Structures are given as C-alpha cells and as structure tokens.
Length: 431
Image: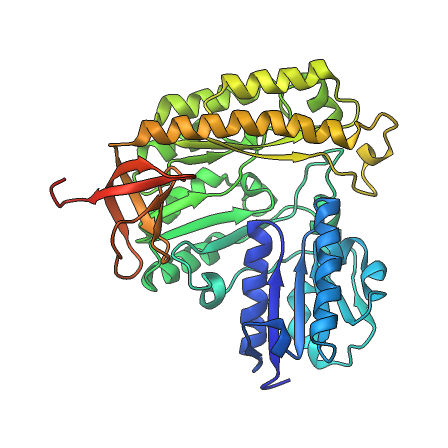
C-alpha cells in the first residue's frame, strides 16, 4: 500500500466533504500518495451522496468515466449510496470494493486486504463512532475548513433516506472539538464551519446531555478562533439561547440556515416534519430582529406527493413573506425505502420543476434586494484565496486587490455583481 497513488472525489453535503478530507488523511498517514486527478491514481475513492436520484445518476456516470479513462484503477465506492445499495454498485464495471458508512472508518485497513469484488456494509444503527475530520486534512487549502462534530439523524422524515444510511445521532466529544478548533486556529484558519448531518442534535445523546449553544460558548471561551459559522440547523433547534448567543458574539457568523421544505402545514405533516409554519416563522423573525443584516437561507422542496396548487401557494406566500436572503430549491425525488416513495399521488415532474422555477425567481429577487441593501455597509469578510472573500452574512465579495494569506478584514461594500458584491475599500484605510 505504501507509495500507492490515490484520488478522492466527494459528492454531496458539507459532512460528506469532511468525511472525504478524513479519508484522505487516513490514507496519507498509511503511506499512500494523493494525486490530483483520477487518471493517474491506482485507487479512485468515490465518496457518495444518495439524497436524490440525480445524485445516484451522477455517481454512475462518474464510475463509467473513471473506468473508461483509467481502466487499471481500482474503483472504491464509499459513503451514503454505498450504504444504501452496495450490490447495485459492486456490479458496475470497474468497481473493486464498496465500503458503506458503517465501515468507512476502516477504509485504510480494508484497502490493504484483498479487495476485489468485496462489499463491506453493516448495520449503520449499530455504529457508535464516525469519521471525525483530522485537523491536518480538514481544510483542503481553504480559509474556512468544515469541522464535522455530529453524524446521523434521529428524525424520520417520510421523504428522507439519510437516517438509514447515516444511522442514529452521534456527537463528537467536547474535548475533541475544542482540540480541533484550537489546532485549526493555530494553523492560521480564521473561520471554522461547524457541520453535521443534523447539527442541532449535537450533545443530545446519553453521556453528554448538552446543547449546541453550550458547545459554542466553550469554543469561544477556550479557543482563539476568530470566527465560527454554523451550517444547516433544523428549525426546532434554533433556540432563543442559540440565536441570542449568535447575535451577541462578533465571533459567530451572522448566518442562519434553517431547512423549510414546505410552507404548508398539511404538507409538513405528511413529511413528518417536527414543526409547523408558525414555529418556523417565529424562528426566522427572531433571527431578523436580533440580527438585521444576517444572511438567512432555507431548503425548499417542490412537488412532494399530493402537493396541491393551494398547498404550493402557501409555500410561495410564506417564502415571499419571510426575509430570506437565499434559497436552495429542489424538486421532490423518490427514494426507495422511504414512506413517501410508496405514495400513489405523485406530482408530475413538469409541475415539480415549474413550481421550482417560480420559487427561484422569488429567491433571486430577494437575494438581489439584500445585496443592494448592503452596498455602502461595512462588512466583516474572510478571504477565500481566489480574489474573493466571504462576508459574515454569507455574501461573496469580489476583492479589488489581493489580500496576503488567510485573514478576516473589515471592508466597505461597493456595487453589486451578478451574484455578490464588489469591495469598495478596505478599512482602516479612509474610503
């Protein structure tokens, strides 16, 4: 295994990206050499997503391409798709091994053993640990490394396959998270993004009995990290305590992402979501009251089984009412093994897409209005290393001149661009 070349390609969410970074570190520590392209690799590891049918289709296309362009490579498929449908994947041409999330922590030792045609998948609900991103592989050259502190999900939304491929909620220990954040800060990373499959559930299981806000207070008190950012947190976990803490600390990014999925009470009930529209509204309105310039985003699904025109209109009206600054919009995708996939009243794809188009138009208008409101404001930004920076409130800023290294700056926002803002000047220089 020592000296053998490997390449990792990641698909899907921030947690999957963090898993991929951990896999790279595991393999590097076992003497393998990472290469930048699958064409020169002896092992090609595909770290998969399976949240939609589109994600599955993309993975199969990539497998065919890798096999065509590098037929000598050993293709190893891991991640969520591997956990859900291992036999489907091992039968694809060129695939040598399938490693589910249940065995992902053992991937380095599995590659040492005879591997051709092997499937390594077990009961994910028996998993008591998860891949915690090693510090040395966390950032991948970025200024904003993702640090996964939670895995799994206790919810059972009727449309979602993720609990069945990620297992029960598990939390990284406090001391582990503190050590990781300290090391990242000492290594010069100005911002750390805390992420998880269901981040707001961090600390809830037996043995910890804490809340996410408790962990953040500890990180603020015991580390020197300049900025913490939270990735997606479910609506019911945006507590008053968490929102007040975010508003009061200049070291927490003013950025709230709370999945909505639907603005219709009846659709949310069919989805088995644990909140109602009025709960969601209360969380977003409190966030805007406490943080007038915060970025506020949501995931919205169109065409859930049985969604009527009237139910979609309830979603559209709620999106129009609330102060969102961006949206992630996607059509419902049938996932085998979920209750929603068995429904008889599926919405035609054309209607799902048309409803998505309506919401996207609304989202574009809201985002543009938000960015125009920021023109002339002072924003705290972290450099991204490509002539751009990310503002605390999740607006991309085009820099007017290079910035040395990774750092956080105060800038005055100039004009809007196609999708962000252009820097006018940097403080404390007079503008």
